[in-house]
Length: 342
Image (cartoon, rainbow, N blue to C red):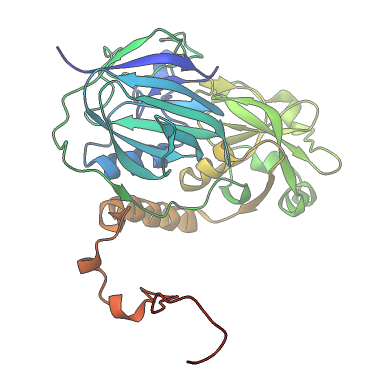
């Protein structure tokens, strides 16, 4: 019998996610998949397995889990308080989890979406070529207590105890955007004000998208009042009727009629997805050539992830400058101090 991950407790937004379902846009189904695909790549690198292995996406809160066999896990994305049988676990790292032990993952400490990966991946049945849940389309559902998730065969059970330094993306920041088909519907003054405005992620948001509340007046376009429903994709920034920009994420609808002032480049979309409520966001227009260059660098960084790993605990023989460290301090001859030199 294959190993299983028993869910004893789960937060309200825990779901199985992978790289999504490309190719179904014409049928009204967006790709879906993890809202932070970089976190999927990080977990795959830590465990030395393919990047399309399914993992658990934890939206703001984790849960409590138990494995029916010895397994490996990796923790990536937004850091959360994780413990194994009460002992704190490092985030952005891989760990051994013995059979019967309890893995507890609490609330998010920064960012929004954390990820729990397992060696071999979560082996739930495929639907339309993927295992990831698409909540907006009704494909699957969130994980509930009592669920038993089947796990795939782990090809590298000995590879564990590794860590890396994640790309910063858990506190908002600057986001690069390119012009959309409807950017010209906004005046040059509105577009300049859009770039100069500081936004804050609204507390309301989900896998379909998040609102970016501006400091000051919203944004408007008279031409946008007659926009026909057109194809939209993750990253598009729709400006709703009240002037609030809405950044679309993995489970966005496939068509929409709100004017789009721009589109977040894929490399920066995790910054929006991972921004906690209230985090500041700034949008900056870049050329298409600059966006393509940024995507190339992001792809190269993902490919380099396996080479960036290092052991969680350094062995003395792996420290070239070991003698430069103060290894012993406070040494005495063991006799009590008498206050004199005799």
